[in-house]
Image (cartoon, rainbow, N blue to C red):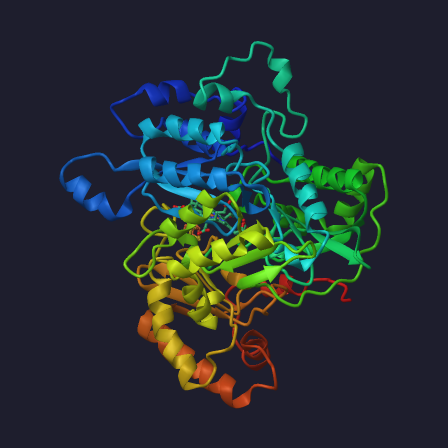
Length: 575
Ligand code: SRM
Ligand code: SF4
């Protein structure tokens, strides 16, 4: 049954009245009295890859001076599989320096965000990106977002073939509007509006954001089960057989409301061949478009449509729309979820260096000139850049003859030492942006996580656990942008300085964690963690990960505040 959508949310009305996402941007941009946009354009600007934000650290000071908030734009690039050329990276570096805070932020979905771009600088920024072959279209909003693809080519000779699927899906699901070109690039106005008729998005787009990722087992580096739709590559004897399709993943929850929950995707079936795979992805989206909730955005993601209608309905409807059978899922196995730091060589003899970037923030500070070093690497023109879903960077496709030159730059700037020396805990940690730019943040994340890790590291040393690769993630609110519910330890902000503590996710991203203690301050967190690690050290089985131990030891007896656990028992066939 399609949802009763008579009571459309205000966003639905804005989308439908937007003239293919044109809104009132021309007027909004011309208004020099404010750094803000008109209200309805806030929802629409997201489809163009931007958010209007303000500096939350400066709200009080500005209010005291009776000034409007310090508005600026966050701009998010579309980088399928996280890949850009060195030339594009140089553009990015320069634009970041000229028009934004200067920090290049690698996101948990393999792309780059710039913050602090003033309204007057938005068009120059997008024009410069466009000249470099980069776009921000559809990286936010109710559309298919940046398509993820496993980052480490050494994993499989089939990486290039699989990456090509990601590009095809991204292209097929891009909105057909000409508005981006007209508004931001001063392109000619489209006269024949039929040319932008959009069979996928029509005039209402998706009910909510839609996320797709492709993973190459055994490494689940993209957290494939956190997506609305995940494709799991099935490879036999070095041949790509096809993909298991998993649907219904999503990491957002609401504190204290069991009706909003994190969920890992469930496997629907198997499909093979490029045409059929892309068709199946497209039709999953059309089902969600037609059946997703358009009244209440809190329950509009595919995961809720799936739980409302059931997997049987989804499979039958998908087969009907595709016109071919979706086969039973094939076995597969995840063995890790991490980035492979350091040098790796692929089957063609090309070299890759994966370097650690704390919370994905590329900048120069008193400890490390990371931004300068990466510019030097880009200037050689000898390495492509791939951003990972763990917020790190792979410098890749390096010819054997060029490896020494790249190595020298990385050594001269201390990048190799930095990556090698960082603790196992930190290498497997992530935090979302949160304050000072995220309007939804209840507390700190990327600015506080390093400070907290400084205090957890000695504790792990004390229990001789420093080499454990425990997956730890923090967010400033329950929306789950660093996927904290799929971590072995998750810190989810409830207020300034307070976090809910989640434990018991597995190492590979196949089991959600559960709420263990609520609203702890730093002392509370450290006291609890000390107890948890001491018990883990004393009672763990051989090679048992922290997450598995926590799940076995504590979680059956912990009263559940969030009910997502019932969805974490996913139906995955094992190899
Ligand atoms: Fe996110 C909203 C940052 C990945 C779930 N996310 C936001 C906004 C745009 C706040 C807002 O709506 O105004 C944040 C901007 C902060 C800032 O100042 O930059 C924001 N999300 C991020 C990033 C930058 C976090 C990071 O530090 O890397 C990630 C950008 C990804 C990208 O490149 O596209 C980011 N967000 C995610 C993920 C992880 C993922 O996709 O694997 C999730 C959980 C998975 C999921 O979608 O379920 C995620 N973000 C959300 C949600 C909750 C959605 C929901 O279903 O309810 C929101 C709030 C919303 O959409 O209403 C949100
Ligand atoms: Fe903002 Fe919350 Fe996402 Fe963090 S998890 S970036 S605080 S919306």
